[in-house]
Length: 419
Image 1 (tube, rainbow, N blue to C red):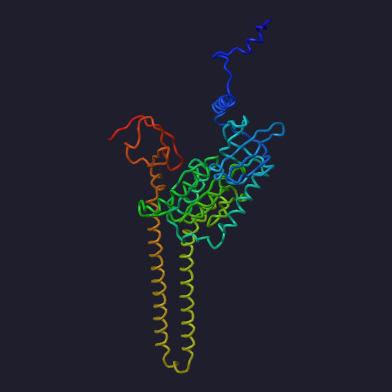
Image 2 (cartoon, rainbow, N blue to C red; image 1 turned 45 degrees about the vertical axis):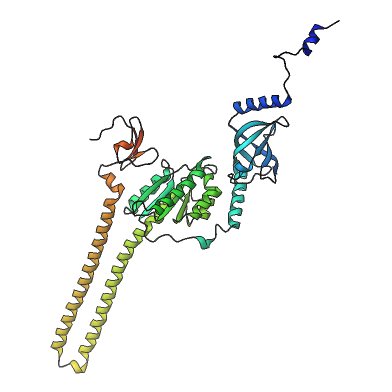
């Protein structure tokens, strides 16, 4: 007797044709990859293995569950530290399957340390590797130019760091021009953008765009957590700083923060404001030095006159000149008059030089874009940072930045006219 219910199991039709294992695994892979195209996962690394091929294989666990992960050679060369068991990390990747074994896994595209212990371990790895290469050798450090005229600033255009730098330079060194090279300063894309910004500043110098190159480059950002500052511990950022043809001042976070970028730079400033103070100090020291030289010269002239007067008095008392007192007095008066003339001439000469120096500073100040802004003018920039000099660079509806003497405005183009 046939059992219909069992017979159905063995009936073959188009709808019930069994799949091969490969077909099923392929379908599962397609569903997983479309449903989990990009995910962030946080956990502890276990079973880490670096294969001879250069690929990394490991597992992530949160103590209650586990997922296998792989990071291939073409991706992991960009990761700024080498994972190890026990490190707590944050991964970005996509979920897929290894079809041959029917196992699903996470293909890692980005890997970041999480937590103080992981950050310290990653920091020490990068530091040790670059130090072994000699990247931090003091012999590589270059002195800053004595009187920088144009300074490049690689930082976020909306962060506190750029405002702090501009405030200090506007107060203490208004003859110094500033070129801002905007970049992200935190997040996954920040290291790549910082490297590109340093490269762009060097290309600007190499191209000689307007005949006045950048003398110094300030690279940094304001304070934040260790994770916020992590982009400046990136190996590629350190190499870009060391490869820069422009001397670099690293200014990252607060005074207590110390980064890989600080070690690679020609000079470390504890804060962005301190970096600006270093640049401004040259102009202030020059003015102080002129004043000191004027005082020293006046003192030396007075000493010479006192010595000459003393010698003259001694001569007046000598027996050989006892019959010529009137003549000696006349010579004394003439000497005193000549001394006064010399002192007056020196004073006038120093005063003229001081006036010329002040005029030169005033002319430089007049050419400064910050001075122009205080007279009611403004600078319009596209969101990319490009300065708008022609209405045809913009279009209706486009957003722009308008920089004023104090602060800036975000505006939208509503009309364009050639008039």
